[in-house]
Length: 165
Image 1 (tube, one colour):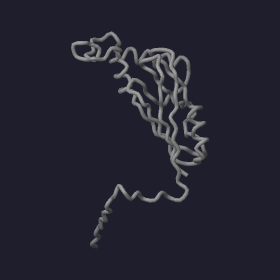
Image 2 (cartoon, one colour):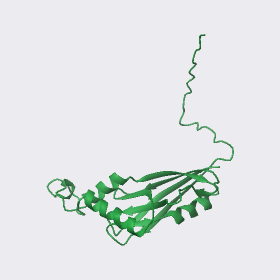
Image 3 (tube, rainbow, N blue to C red):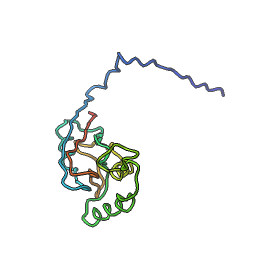
Image 4 (cartoon, rainbow, N blue to C red):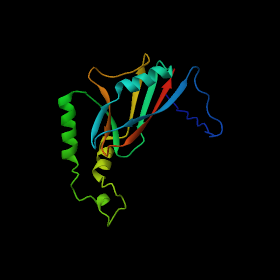
């Protein structure tokens, strides 16, 4: 039996976007927070769910992107003892007192001396993409969306994009 695979290539032209499926929508907001501590964890689950509800999108995706290199966004359980443990883990994993070149005027022009903050942000990541089901972020029983501040206190922004039907 001879089966042949036929590959069809379609030329993509940036000036002619493909039509979106019927009913497909995109909704975008930039949310702001003012943090109060150098390292701070903030449960942002309800605020993100509010944006998802306002988007009018019932099923799809929500993409979260921190607009800073010294913050992170991640999922975990929101429980006081665990939040304390997360902070301790981050402090132990990336020492603020280490001799980082980013903090050394011989190598860097950064006056904030925040190499540890950048490294923690890199380690934890600045984006999340989550499913939206029934106009709500799909999360497990104990999951919360957490914004991590590593170089506060500061004003912080996060882009939230909801797409779907």
